[in-house]
Length: 366
Image 1 (cartoon, helix red, strand yellow):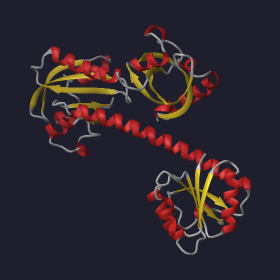
Image 2 (tube, helix red, strand yellow):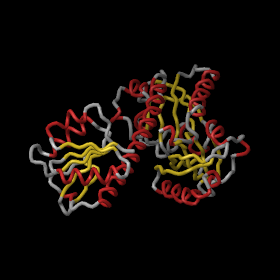
Image 3 (tube, rainbow, N blue to C red):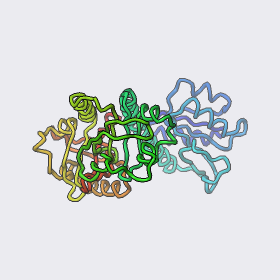
């Protein structure tokens, strides 16, 4: 159960909270000497720290700062007599919840349960963000190591991502490149050139390539453009010297495909019109224990645990309506076991089709 610390100079208050929470099986420690909080917290991993705002020997704001510094994972609950604690004069983001007097066993237990639930959700979000951040940094480091300019544009020709070599060759900083029109940055023009392979790729939905003059780089380069299905959609541009061999180009794209296909997380591509699967990476096929022909054109609703299926589809629709997001659910894996997961989804448009990229993050990986 949880490890809880109560800090107050009101011994009756300490006894009430301690008795209520110990009866729930929690381990409860207490301190009536606020100046000794640092020693008490050091080396301990508390889940919740209750702090009485009516302490005389030390400002409670200072105690909150000490707790935040020495026990950053702990949730802070202020014990107060304010009728509306959220307007108290020193309210900060460091405070998770409030326990408002007069106290009752039910109130104490409910606040503790709610705070522990919030702590679990917060930890899951931090771990998920950490995993996603690590994967993003790994990908960026890989692309930044490539000696050719590589950048991604959206359907309006806005540059939304670029590798380090792009900035170096342009001689411009991030704030002078991202969000700008690619034809303005690379060609000094008000519209895309007539021979723009990016325009052809948008119209055909297929890879396009051409050798064109880049005024912004003062160089004539080969420009290969590839439709990007995931990460919100768009078009990847790879600039290189025209002498680059076909074999080298193929090897580079094979490397990109390998990075995606060897992702440690299952990823599905679904059609928003009927919510059926149109593509899946290798990890998704392994996760669901299916061959490619046995998962394509399958309704995604059938992958969720029966009692979660309808709610999951409703959540997915809501996330996609908001242009991306996540939600918790339960999915049936290949062996037929229910798995708690976090679903991360966003909309993509490919060849005028309304699709969605769905990433499945098993909770045990968080």
